[in-house]
Length: 268
Image (cartoon, rainbow, N blue to C red; front, side, top):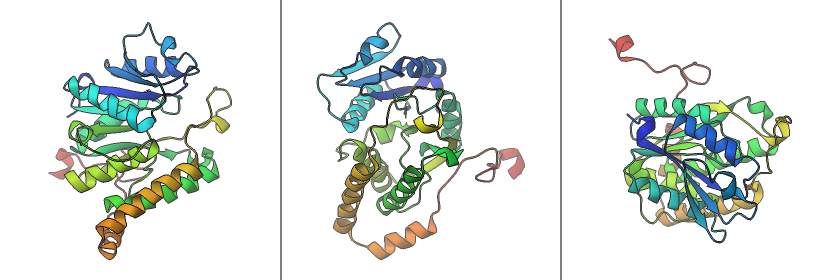
């Protein structure tokens, strides 16, 4: 069972001076170990959090989100954590959701837990929602099972997933590939916990930078990466049957998106 003192929050950051201090302070309220990877920012991102009790790893030049996550995982594993919880530095993710993700991790040991942007999804720009659904189906061809919101960057990774060697792919491709590699090498599945969608266009009272994720560019990269892997492995009909037989696993105690989990007392 993951405990707040036994995990690390890893936050990749590229030019996040606008919101990084708020994001880090909120994460510290939930977990004492926070690791920020400053990916060659030129806007003073690191200086904004210099006085906070966090570890800051700095890249002298931009290396991409994949390299940032690898470095964050490496530092977290060096500390002997049970798992890593990732958040973006732009304020899109709410640190108050961390306890819910950890509770889901306790109910689903060994799973990757995804903060799935299912609540208030009507606030999500249409092109983003359609792109995410396309991405979910594409990643299913690598994992053999369906995932609700496979593109969300708010995730809990068990330590054994963070320790996977030679996970290919850079930038946002890495986040897709580590889910695929965990499924293929460890038999790991994902479970999704519903969270709210938070976007610049619909939260006019908050300042949020434009997303680094470019749907056409990045989904093209992710899709080509997965298609190549599928063709190399073969067995396409079997993968399709597996996908159809394994719908998304959603942990939702409210029962809005899935029946609440059965407790041991209820089971008896």
